[in-house]
View 1: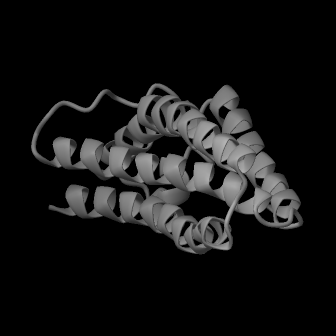
View 2: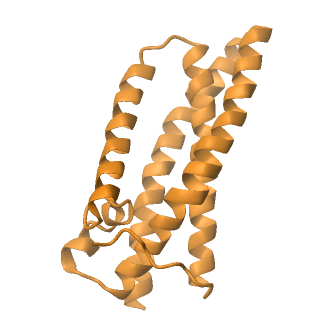
View 3: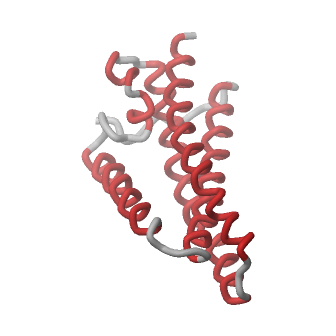
Amino acid sequence: MAARAIAIWGILGVLALLARALLRLTPIAIESIEQGMTGVEWSIWGSWVVFNAWAEGYRGFQKRFSPRVVARAFHLGANPRLLHVLFAPAFCMSLFHARRRSLVVSWTMLAAIVVLVIFVRRIPQPWRGIIDAGVVVGLAWGTVATVVLFLRGLAGRAVAPPSDLP
C-alpha cells in the first residue's frame, strides 16, 4: 500500500505541473480564436496544432516522457528513500538520481522550456495564441498518456523498469 501511495504522490506532482500549464495556456489559445484570425493564420494554427500533437504529444510525451515518469514512480514506490520520496515529482521527471545523460537532457529541456515561456510571453496575439494552442494539445496528450500508463501499471500491467537510474 505504501508503494502505491509513493508512486501516486510522484505522478500527482507531475500531473499538477502539467495541469497548471494547461490552465494557464488554454485561455490564451482560446483568446486568439475569439479575436478572429485570417485564413493564413488559421492554416498556420491547424498545421501547428497537428505538428505539436505528433511531435510533443505522441513522440515527446507518449513515447518518451510518460513511460519514464511512470516507470520511475513505480520504482520509487518499490525502493523508497526519504529524500527521493519527498521530492518524488522531480525524481519521476529525472531531475535527480539519474544517469548523467538523462540529467543533462532533463535539465536542458527544463531550461529551454523556461526560456521559451519568457520569449513567447512577449509575442502578440494571434501568434501567441497559435503557439499556445499547439502546446496545449501536446500537454493534454501528455497528461492523458501519463494517466493511462499509470492506471495500467496500477491495474497490474507490467511497467518497464526505468533505464536511466545510476
